[in-house]
Length: 397
Image 1 (spheres, rainbow, N blue to C red):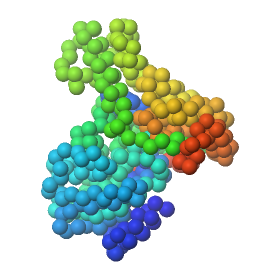
Image 2 (cartoon, rainbow, N blue to C red):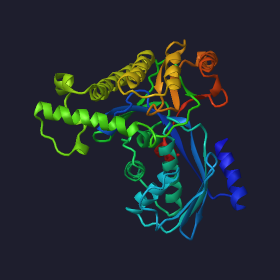
Image 3 (cartoon, one colour):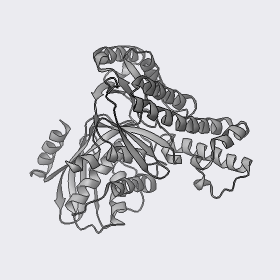
Image 4 (cartoon, rainbow, N blue to C red):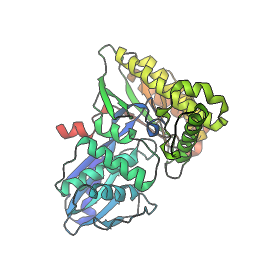
């Protein structure tokens, strides 16, 4: 158990027991990928795997964090966080410290040990570790954040300190989700709905297939894809005669679908593809939510597969290994649907599966994938998960 490992390691390092244990679940987005950064619609679940942090307060104001997955210890003072990122895994936590201190006085530091229960890659581990750290830092300082504050502070840390052009999908799922409910979020105004699985819906579980390739948004083409979408949107505004301002303010949500349909042939191919994904994904989320309300897991899954195909063809994401994994999933009996688990630059694939096929799915996908990429046999893994409560729901318990 991850929570046990980080507690044991904490005692080994500090010769004392931790005083607190924070947890944040990972998330998946079956439909709605590459959309939130331009104020789109998303669907999501939190899953029953995530990030644990065992911690104690440090009265001298020092923050000292250790990771079981990464060797370098990170250290800074709550009153003198570096103004610029340092280029390592702890930047997310430094950014969270700075963002929290903009709104609340911090008097106490924290020492802790971080452990993740799944491999890094596509499950929003960066948001999960940021939120788990924020929970610990708030606890030792006597601060109680609302769900919205947790989302906004973690978002600010990743976007404005680390420099990833994200939206609020990851943070919102990990905070707001509820077990056995689909989160339907509109990132235009952050309004959301938790939709229970209908009684007539067939049973499902979530399979996570880790490709064996580690994942980093900062070092990937993630920001480039977002810029290409914004460039397409900016051009559409100009072609159509819409008023427009600075490039960074160009957002697909502000350009109606009919404008895109009318002028898309004028766009460079790469810009058109990015826009095609965004606009069709917007419709897929709406259609997927209605399928979920009806209890039609097959249609919901089909739309998730469609989302995955658009991510490959139109968003042009995914390493060859990950694309092959997706293709294998589409041909495997018992899988309702699935796609890349995150931005699609290495990492994991997710699948909504019929639990009756759990063993055969794991065996079939693994055999086919490893026959293509035998050198990944030591790293490739399969995990079967359930939906779970986000941090806001867990705090109510």
